[in-house]
View 1 (cartoon, rainbow, N blue to C red):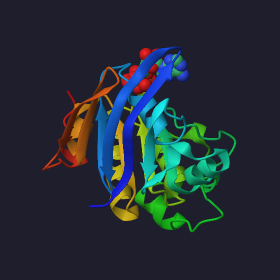
View 2 (cartoon, rainbow, N blue to C red; view 1 turned 180 degrees about the vertical axis):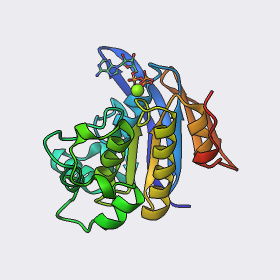
View 3 (cartoon, protein in one colour; view 1 turned 90 degrees about the vertical axis):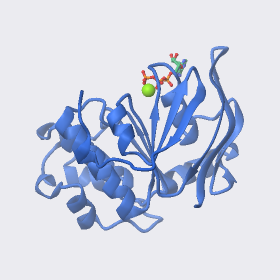
View 4 (cartoon, protein in one colour; view 1 turned 135 degrees about the horizontal axis):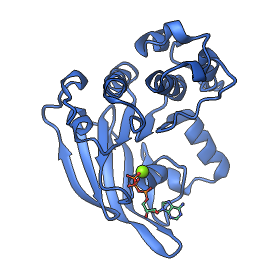
Length: 231
Ligand SMILES: Nc1ncnc2c1ncn2[C@@H]1O[C@H](COP(=O)(O)OP(=O)(O)OP(=O)(O)O)[C@@H](O)[C@H]1O
Ligand SMILES: [Mg+2]
């Protein structure tokens, strides 16, 4: 297995308070990792540090062996543009652009894109391409955000509570489609959630508590998204 992302003793301090207290981990290529943990434990902060949105206070983040956390601004921007996709809880679509235009915003001109037609087929968005975000359900909007994030074929896709605003049916669909995206694009996914059922679909489950890696479990038999049972 190839290690694509590594954290070595990363810490993050805000206003003199240490929020991440020394996290080390290695993520294998083409895996889906769920990140669980109580509210305020540092999940989003860890994702931000791992994905280059923030620098760690100490420690390093490596992608394919390169120390990205020490990249200068331009180099960091280029790495993020080429290799990193983000999906957030609140979709962040551009309201005055159509679905098709929103997806195309993610195209990176310096790099080959994933086939637009194939991507919209995988994400079941064909019939919404001419619509505007306000005309779509939350689940449909999130699928557009996923398409926008992955059309450039990033190495890494970071999803922070990507189903946090969705109901059961739409959450299941988004999780199912993210697994398809992992398989079809070979992208490596990190997905923070409070949902233990989503964690059961993951290849690996990290639990963060009080800024530390509390548990690290590999799911020998991940369940299919369709098998998730909501409490
Ligand atoms: N930019 C910031 N400045 C100051 N404190 C911050 C900042 N970002 C996060 N924190 C603090 O860091 C702690 C961890 O926040 P974080 O958002 O990483 O938690 P989380 O595990 O993602 O929680 P949730 O499940 O509610 O999303 C919290 O106490 C939060 O207030
Ligand atoms: Mg969070």
